Image (tube, rainbow, N blue to C red; front, side, top):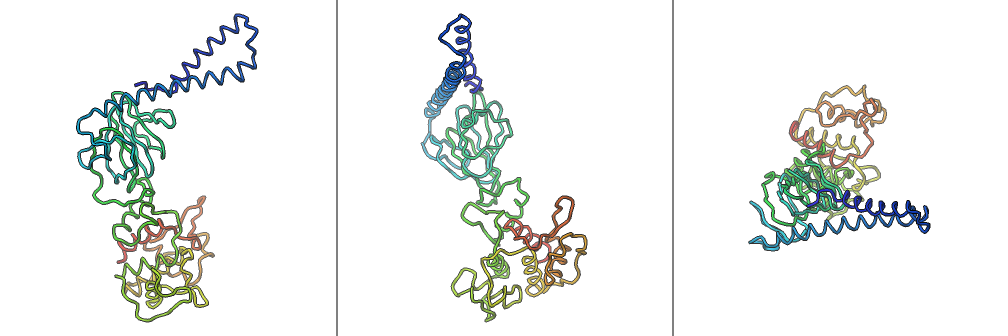
Length: 364
């Protein structure tokens, strides 16, 4: 298989251009500079590109014909374990750490999640028309073809990844425990934290395959997490809120949290369940849980005087923030060399997974 498809098109175009140059040097008065620039040159380049694409398709068709002749090909999505065969690029989910190894003529389509490819020869990104370096990261919605005398190992680098695989492949097992999330990758700072929260069923994704790590968590979500952490006890009476009617997925959690003194309302008899939980609200709930539900000693705390936005921290949240910083549940961010707490900023789902991991491992 030709390893360089773009150079093939360029070479063909240059042959055509050379012919044009000869005609011009022979004094052909019918060929003007504007014609060469505006008509002939673009047409020649397109002709080269078309030839390159035709060569690629012929190579692919030949490889596929060879694969179709492999005994035992079942035309399905491929087996689990030692490997399998697939005659289409049908979408399929693969799990964290699995390694899919293909050889010459095999193909794959990256659809969602994260994966890398290590190879011994050439893997072509057919969509972009370039070769992929060994160890390179796959691009979403790009199709790839394994080159001549090449073995290519595709490794899943997210909780799950959606790929289509075509041809014979070997499959090596991945991690025994993994999340179903396409958007939680091994390279993310929150990878281990989200895995912790998911495995312990503290909270899941926004749908079956997305955790949405940078989305802010709301107040109902967090109090529900703490309710589950406590074993989901039935609230005994307690405070009611005008915006938390009976029968909602978070109704009992909010009433439990209010009755236990873990959370409070937002004024005028409301709880504001859909409002973003701020970083100071989050640490206050954890602080109250540690003291009132877990019976922990929460006295003492870190010196917060070095944080440049300390004036933005609400007075009622200062003891909780000081305690949380001392325990390592929350840390400041160095913004341009200035240490800040960002107390009024909404806590993201990734940040909450991180806080809860430290809280469970160090406090509970």
